[in-house]
Amino acid sequence: QVQLVESGGGLTQPGGSLRLSCAASGRTFSTFTMGWFRQAPGKEREFVVATRSSVGDAYLDSVKGRFTISRDNAKSTVLLQMNSLKPEDTAVYYCVFTPRRIITSQMGVAGSYDNWGQGTQVTVSS
Image (tube, rainbow, N blue to C red; front, side):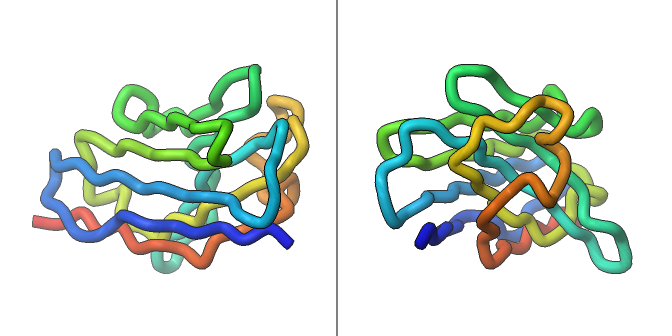
């Protein structure tokens, strides 16, 4: 059974930075796709970013150049560095994971992921 342990998040002012981390535990994974979705109050859940083993990353257009995902394959862990944060980035961020290398067109689809974290709050406000 895979468990996702999230940490990070919190409150920052516009233009500030936060970092999220997520670790998948339960067993060792040779390949995986991992990333983040977010959901703001009253809004639909949306894809933010994902990274695939030996392939690359995909980002929501509005976070490109501001958010950076990195991974530690040996630890099945991803980090999300969020810079130049805006009030519209305020949301609950959910870590997602699948041991499969899903195709690019499916990386932004919530149903592509087998496991979800409990969510961590990110608030950007002055």
